[in-house]
Length: 261
Image 1 (spheres, rainbow, N blue to C red):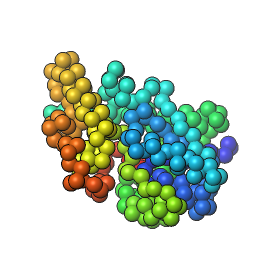
Image 2: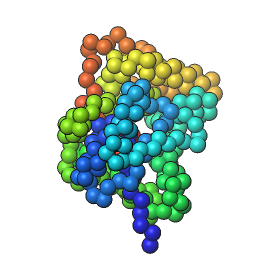
Image 3: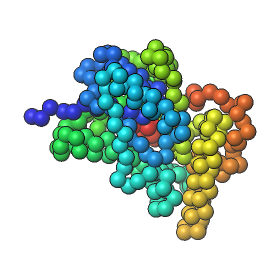
């Protein structure tokens, strides 16, 4: 039987960064053979700014990172020009979510296939923390396996921040696409305050998808679960009020370990 390829799904946030650091320090065995950052094309600006620094640290510590992208192009272009794979909110509920599968999970799998061949079993190291143990899920392909090393070590999210600091690296903000509808109320306030350019892009998407939906279906859609326009709910003038990352976590419809890590 072919030996599986073990890789680390790097989201750009503190948990998956801490997981990579622990791999580099020999604290995770077996060690990941490759770190894959699936770039959706709609990542937050700060995440992309910090990425070269982390990639350099990985290389210095014997870990290879690759940035891989979806065959469908950038997620925000797809939303603007084609359809809605993101789970927007409607008056009657919440739309289907296809974004994590197409822009994260498949991208990682395709990269492994490209490097090691088809039909190779895979083990994905995912960055869920011990306080998220209830979100653990098996891999969707039977021959593959998900692994949760931070949970194995009973490490919570605050411990991940400390590991990042011990490595001499800046602690990143919680990773997510700038327009992600699974962001909590406080999370929207934080991005409006700390990343106004990203928030303005989210406002643009919010208004575009609602205008298009009204024209084609007569039904409004929203990025916020309040089902109101982002521009009316939050303001980039709130910088002095919201300076901390979201302490409450994100809506748990997110695919565990691939997004918000």
